[in-house]
Amino acid sequence: MAVEFSVDEARERLVELLDRAESGEEIVITRFGAPSVQLLPVQGRSGGGFATGLIAGSWVVPAGAEAFDVGTDYWPDSSA
Image (cartoon, rainbow, N blue to C red):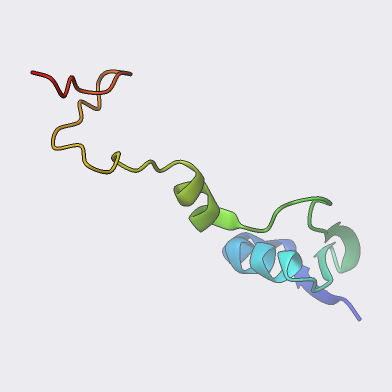
């Protein structure tokens, strides 16, 4: 059974409705009292959200490196 929200309610609670739809709940938005659209999650979405993006976008300083220049793409010269 779908849960219905008016356009005004949906506008005020959009983030909540997106979360609920992504978790599998059927959300229908009504216009003038009649069903207009249904919120559905995109198929194939990883569902990882923000935390997955943070982990994927992070990097680790190499082990044993005393100094690592982030602005370059080479390892520091250890013979210096």
